[in-house]
Length: 432
Image 1 (cartoon, rainbow, N blue to C red):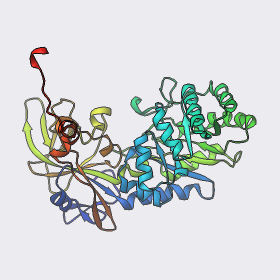
Image 2: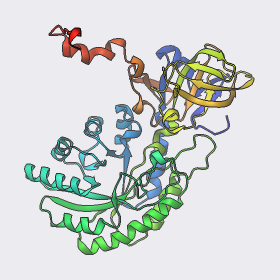
Image 3: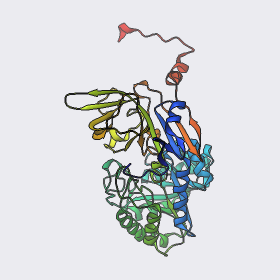
Image 4: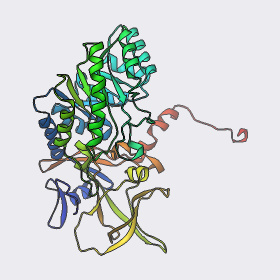
């Protein structure tokens, strides 16, 4: 299979995940279908937890990577925290059982209503990303007659050597407070009556496959940390972000253990603050796949096309980032190779799952497994072209459970119909 996807293996010429036939799942639940391995998610989380040993730490799982309630509950039960970026993600995290004191709120555009919601639920802290946001949090906290606990997300101007769309620690990025401006803003925060500064941190990007950018970022952060602890004794958390990559193709990616060791080495022994990390993709990414079926094979003059029933509305990454995802046959047989582009049914030229790739000569009706779809697949799905979103299945200990039902056509129009059902809508076409 080239790259090794743990938990996925062929048995009797059929691809299985943790002992469960993917063909059986497709037959029972239809396609497209997201399938996740609970065993792999647990293994990844426990590896990272063990790597921190006795050091005080909080692993704040990045909810945006995969926000299925059952996946979230699995991690909450293991002791994970939740890193959220919206009021909706806060709602999901609470519904899944994350204690509020293990929830961290990131994001550059928190609304007044979202801040109010988070304060009422007594989350651990907000990661502040601008001076105006700081003022807003102080204002909302004052209205609630509460103290808002905050940390500062700083922008260290470090190149994470990843796709520009997921690089968040560069000077031109919208994320974080420029590290040179941080002393001024931290001191200002210390003068406010309704915020309490309890941490500083940074997050430099996503799908990072080298440790050197982390080392550079943490070194810069630690210089400021030493100054900040002179201004206040309240700093108890050091947030080192997330973004560790996974192997989509044949990338050499650091292990979760080596990532943690790198971070701890750079932090050293100068602090007994709680180390916070925010992994997402590295916990769930390679623990899932997207099953789809070949609808047609179209041989053109300039390109061959393998058309599947999954499209960019099910997996956005290849269209958005030109990202690579391995594609495996669920039923193994001796395929000849051909150069082809794997596409979906969406009415967009950008609806590409694999671009001009030397791949198996799949035939109509064949079942395919698009790998590495545990992260940033279902969460980025849409109903574009009025396509119902796919179902999701979790495999655990050789068993499986449907953890999200497939949407129906009725689901597509439910809110629209509900809004107009009590009153007939008429449009004066001559007035347009």
